[in-house]
Length: 266
Image (cartoon, rainbow, N blue to C red):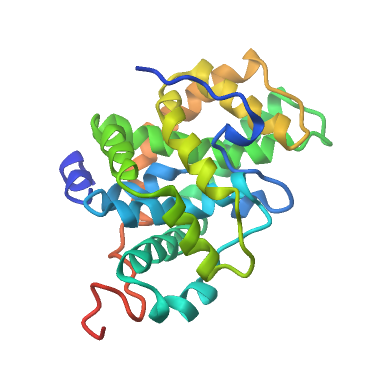
């Protein structure tokens, strides 16, 4: 997949230190189910800001209010009751969940996760250190976002512009309509996410290391040190080599649930 195909699918920021404003999902009992690649989920839908916002919702919730989850079954059960704008946000949530299912089962992702976990293990040899498998997973996802940004230099600007057109309160309202429990934390976090613009940090290894250290500390694991920088550089080269293949795992048509705005049966 070349840059043209990516396009057809469509100031370094202030670093937010507040632990709930880091912008990276909280990873506890099941980090393998926590996706972190905001841009990879949303860049194909930049012509629909509501859809883009919906694709970010599962990750936003895992930071802002981890007690609240959106599930495909719950979203589909309420889809017919939603307004037009709310349906578009809900469709973005469904797209994210569908993408994750495909992405985390792809052969290339599993191979890279194993490779990077092993490289981190070599510098963290304590077998009781839980950081290597966690890092093997999330580094792929963060660097995949950077891979997309390098292929389409303006895409991050376009991504944040799209999100700026959506009301944070409206996003929270949709979650409260389709989730099993309500949240009152999401709208504030969405505003922090948009102002921090931390996705630009992924292009710089020391800044990326700082973000990863924040994640480790938030899950009560030790912070990372400069010993990890060579592994991050190697990981960046691997993503440059295999990024297109990883994206092919989610290069599927837009999910068309019942009551979709683009579904002929609606």
